[in-house]
Image 1 (cartoon, one colour):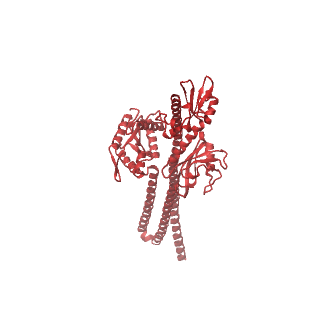
Image 2 (cartoon, one colour):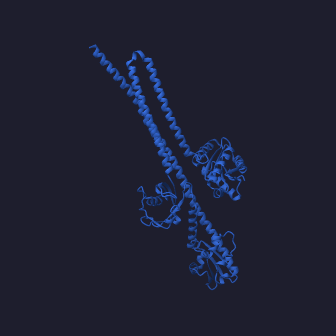
Image 3 (cartoon, rainbow, N blue to C red):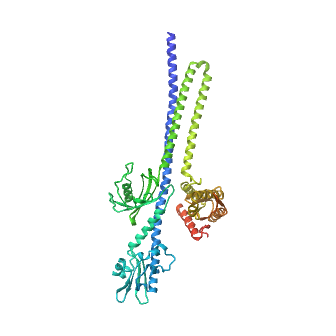
Length: 550
């Protein structure tokens, strides 16, 4: 009877001990791994959002810079055509050429160095004129085209109507006749649009990026709702009509999404699947589109998300593999614990101290192994963070990370009554370097100049690649005069440094604009002031430092 009771006690002793050990191991490990997996997923999501935000910022800047270029082309064309009208009116008055047939060759003699050669050669198709006898209220000469005929119907009102005639010049001849030289609205808009389209076709962005334009005909959508005006990826389809019913390979309706977005907000970000440049591969694409209302144009650009998607997928796979390995390690640990615990229970009286020590050492070794695995994951995440915050080519901070640093410095100076300067530098004639020696040479120039500038700023200063060939330096705890000195030091170091590429040696210069902290101005306004100084330096002759002090 005692033997049976002893065996029963022993059975429950072993059972309760093993169950207790399993329960303790599970209660400690399961929450840990659930929390670790949640942490992995959060890091992946943060990384993805960070990269996508940077891509969106880039697309936004490209489209809005393009719209600024369009406005500049319109203004510059208006200026040019007004100068053409003035030059031609003086030519007609002095030469009396209007009395006979006007030949293309005769108008080529118009002297004005600001008139483009392409415009001069096509001048007869651009301008029209009439010679008006004011006393007798009759037309005595004209360019004999439809525009001249329409203008002659109401001369006095048309001469001042800039909506119908954006470029008009008037001169009185020796005979007392009024000579009106003008450009009709239709001619003006046609030539402006052609210039814009030529510009867009010529623009190429990084990673085979490009800009395209669709002209909306019907804001209600449906078939033929728009015309594809410019599309460098599909130039043979320019002029074709588009439909909001068109789907991509994933079932999305990109044209409908685009139309609904610009109607509602004027612009939008959206993604879909589209053919890559110079290949038939269809890939996931993120696009930013904005409505340019004066022409009913949708101006857009985009980036393919292959790299981002692959980066996220690879990181997910790596983290999942690490997580599975940790679970396997935990299983081995638990098994070892069970074996050791059973031995411990069997020989409890004789080997209590040794078994406890072995148990503790085993647990610590396994925990150390888990910590090492976790450190590896954190290091991998650190590398991915560098991808999001550093410029891949130069190793400098990118625009996003520098803007965050500027925000911190702005806040600090606002509280402490301190100051900082922003130095915005742009490599002179960088496009010529790329066009002449290739983009490989351009990359070497960017890397070398990054090193030179990093060596010539103070330890407390910061430098970033702001975009393309532009660099932004943040000089802390210094005023505008100190900033000019720092910028001049950088400029001088670059000017006296030779850069070697293959068998050639280059001398490169940089123009820099400097602005200082002003609590009455925002960060963007201070950057804009530095940018204005930079472009003033470009116009002044390059290779100089410009600020409000100079």
